[in-house]
Structure formats: structure tokens, C-alpha cells
Amino acid sequence: MVARNIKTSLGHKGTDIETSATRELPEKRIDSVSLIYVPLHLGGPHKGTSMGPAAIRVQELAERIGKLGFKVASEKEINIPHSVCWWDQNSTAKCVPEITEVSVQVAEAVESAMDAGTIPITIGGDHSLAIGSIAGVSNYYRKRSEEFGLVWFDAHGDINTPDTSSSGNVHGMPLAVSLGHGDKRLTELFGYTPKVKPNRSVLVGIRDLDQPERDIINQSGITPFTIRDIDHLGLGRVTDLALGAMGHDVSGLHLSFDIDVIDPDTAPGVSTAARGGLNYRESHLALTLLAESQMLRSIDIVELNPAFDMRNKTAELAVELVLSCLGKRIL
Ligand SMILES: [Mn+2]
Image (cartoon, rainbow, N blue to C red; front, side, top):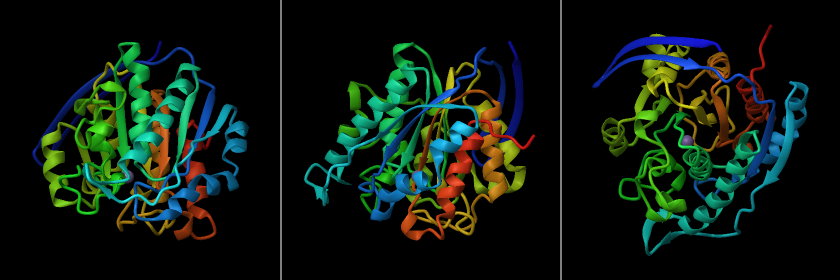
């Protein structure tokens, strides 16, 4: 049994973090993955995210995972309802009935992939799919009475509710939903809420927030690391701090990685780009460090929009990032 010590302190605006974590690493490394493709666009403003899974298949994700020494146990594509959805009478959030239907399918696929002893990798598709994937992850740990940590990489907070969102787009709400805030049809999925606890959740790379989101983040109890923190401390240290912040007693980590956390010069093929993001090397470093923690148990890669991409380079980057998550190393 190997133990890793993380001892950190960071004075953040309004937040003091002092953590010390000793983790027991799992004896046996999981060596198979399940790929879950979610060609979802109903949560965002751009239909191009529906092409994300296709673009990633073009870059041969499954084959390259195989070359890394992992077995691809299954590949599944989630059915997205054909819909021109709009605001409904029950909520100012758009397409909630459709996204609820997708969330249930995604959750069931993720949970059964984990039950089968594989790492589910959910490929989007807009970030509203994380409502389903995190529900599936939560169901998995809940029935084992175990805790899990959530690491959310994003340029945005994704923590709006129907009351605070100016667009009504659900891809700006999935973190709020997972923490138990927002439209009840989504927060109450599978009959319980929240799906993840705020003290187990970290948000990394944020730089483009709506005003209400600032207040929600400050009051939510999650641990935020802004792009300013990354500039100040370096992403390596921020990633260590993020791992320490969720406590020493989690059984696994869920990574929800929004490709828009990366700078648009490097990753132009995203739905809602924001300047000043992670560079190519930083994004690989963060995921390599998560892989080295040996705690990563489930993954989302989201918001790829091939309609805005150049020569499929963001899809290629997304595939490389998945390989880094699975422990691809230079030496
Ligand atoms: Mn997002």
C-alpha cells in the first residue's frame, strides 16, 4: 500500500484552505474503460456540440486507448431526443424535460460501467450531460456508502440556476444541479439530492463568471481555483491543492473537464470560448497529476464543437487529454 501526503495552504480571497491528506491508493489499477458518447446540444446555444463525439471518433479515441494498454470494454451512444425546445411554463431553463431524459440514460450508462469495474469516459456534447454522469457516479458510491470527490475544470462557473441565468441554457447550470440547486426535475433525479457535497467539490480554471455566480460560488462551500490562482501558484500546485481540498477519505474522483478551460488559441473548437485559459502543457500537466493520484475513477470531456474547430485540432487535443487521464506519460 502506498500513501501520498499532500500538505498545503493557500490564502484565497475570502477562503483559507489548510489541508492535509493521506490517501491509501488502490491495490489494483483498473485496466478497462467504457466509452459513452453523448451528442447533446440542447443545453447550450450551439448545435455544433452534437458533433463532438463524431469528431473524437475521427481521431480514433478507442483505438488509441487500446494502444495505451487499456481494454475498451464497451462503446455506447446515448439517444438525444429530436427537439426544438424552448422555455417552458415550469421553468426559465430551456429543454429541461429533454435534458432530464438524457440525464437518466447517461446516469444509467455511467453507473453500470462503474459496476462493471471499468472507467466510464463520457464524451460530449454540451456540459449539461454532467448532470447525468455525476448522478450515475453518485448512485455508484451511494450504494456502497462511499464518498467521492468532484474536480470540475471550466472557464465558467456552470453554477447558475434558472433564477440567476440570463440565457436559460442548462449547460450553465450542471454544477449547481449536482450540488442540489436549480430545477427540481434535475436536482431530484433518482429521488435524492445533492448528488455531490460542496466540501468534496473543486472548480478549477474559472475566469468568466456571471455576477450571481460569484455570490453562489462564495456561498456554496465548494473550493474555487481561479485562473489568477493558477497564474500565481502554477497549475501543478493548484492541482495538488485541489486534490487535498476534497478530503482524505474519498474513494475516487470524478473529473468533469470542459475543454473551454483551455485557451481558445489552443482549443478553438468549443461552444463558448473565453480568452486567457490554460495552455497546452498546463492542461496535460493537470490531467497527468490526476492520473498519478490513482484516484480518477470516471471522466467527462465536454463542449467540443467541431463547427468552430480548425482541422479537428481540438478533437485531437481532447483525445490526447483522455490519454493523459489514463496515465500516458513521456517516459
Ligand atoms: Mn462547462
